[in-house]
Image (cartoon, rainbow, N blue to C red; front, side):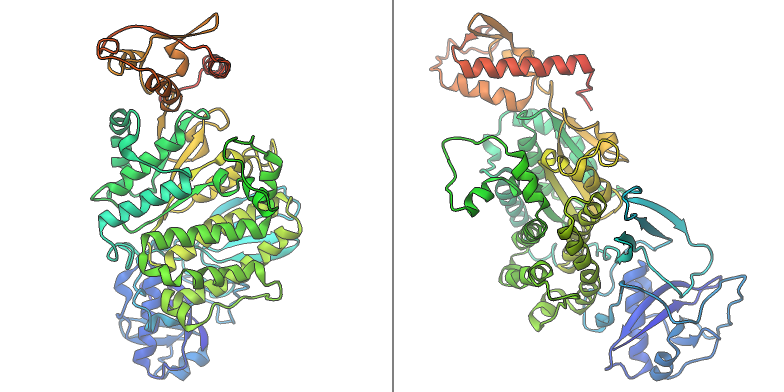
Amino acid sequence: MTELVVFENHDVCLQHVTRVRVPREVNTLELFLGVVSAHIAAFSGDATAAGRYRFVYSLKGKPLWHVSDCLEAGEVVVSCTPGFLERKRSTAEVSASTPRFDAFSSATAASLFSPSCAAAATPAIAFYSHNVSGSGKNLSERAAKNVGGGRSGKGIELDATVFNINGHRLVLPPPPRFVDPALGAVTEVQHSEKVAAVRTLLSLKLLGRPFLVNELLFCEELRLRLEPIVATAISRNEEAAARVVVEGPPKSGVSTTLAYCCHMVASAPVSRFHGCLFLPLNFELLFDTAWLQLSNGGKPDEKRVPPVDVENQQALLLDVPFFFLTLVRLVVDSAVAQRPSLRDDSKVLVEAWEQLVTRRDLDAPQFGGSRLAQVVGHRALYEWDAFAVAVVQVLRAVEDSPRDMVLRDALIETVLVGFVSHLASALRFSGVVYIIDGLRCLASVLRHRVRRPLGDAGVFLRCLTKYQWAHVIAGVDKLAFPPPAVLLPGPVQCLGLLHLLSPELLTRHYGYPAAIYCGDKRFPLQVLMGAPGYLRALHALLDAHAWTTMEKGEGMSYVLRVEDDGVLHALQNLTKTLKIESDSGLDCSC
């Protein structure tokens, strides 16, 4: 297999510069042009490029009539019309020297054998340099640099992310192109099956408990508030990626409301997310300290909920092999749930990526095997090979220095964004819907008041907002994070849970008490702040009482007395939260 640089002839300049691997089986100019055309169509976003090129020239304008001549030239120009003049330097300076790609290869020679070669994507008009200094002074700074005129064939880095790790320059290949509509994710399962799969994922991966929509409290009120938000998020007319935030204090019902919002998104009969991979990421659930107890041979105490051990939780998040393997298995499990045909191949996918941390003897892991090639295609394997070269270096550097903030930034972007995009694209999803919860524990990792004010969480969200294929539906702790407009730059839709339900609605329609007496203190219903999570505890108390029809009449006003130290403590904490909200002037309406 031979590599060469290919330019597309244009009236003004050379464009769509790309690097192509030509298989040895290609021995005619027709096959050669087929490979090149399919590659340019897949990586430039111009679907009409597939099959339209008929002529090949050298950069000097000499016609090339044999594949061997093209391979010998190293850099060629393809055109759909005859005739090509050498470009002047004032118009488009093109270097004929050997191109330098460092650790990056966007090759896709297997486009002859892959049905997904004609991928739709956005034409690249700029490349981005990611400067991360070894001293950690310039963190995650991306500067868009316009490429004027033609592109040089020397030192090409197409939308690549560049890290400087320990004084060495590391090029991270860009995320692959996603195909919309997806080739496999849409047609394989029926809509009802996809909804059921997402609901199961929400139960297992997001909530850690059964998610029963029919038993959801205040379902009608939540639905009315979420309908316009969901309608905007799923609209095919929206060009920007979806950004939805559900926010409220701890225990106010953020996780349940987030799950219900995602259920509505997945249930929509017409949506731009039909071919997307729904990826639930609850970091508190994924990196629960119970994993440490189980690994030490202990048994979890089901009767008592242990306090959150922040130190051990950070230890799990800083454990690079555990962090990477957990994410690999989560992404594969989520993909298999939404595409059942992958079930028999899940082990192959997991083992292919696990080798990046389990085999220290491999400097450049190879993704091979007929089984894996059959699942994702040869083009995806070439992309994985190039990506793995950079990933291995990042993983090992972070494993050696787990508290280095610069390396941690590189790890977050490489694993939570780069790896997810490569796997989702190879499995023929049209994008990724990140369903994020438990950000508070992620924000505590390597937190720095100036350099990393939100720890890993800030880096993760900042990386996601750079890509159109990454849609975000997140649950946010209102007391620990800044407003959504600051957290996620760009258009954001928000649902605040505080004061979602008015006291008048609760007392007149749902028969809730106007106040709660506990000991010698009186707590008005407003102390629960109209949040579904806080009201659920009161709902449980009311269910424990044997109401009669006359006692619990609609519109009836009454008070409730509860003599319990735990209830008194909880109500006092809610009073403090309400005071914090009042003193800080928090906007609860988003």
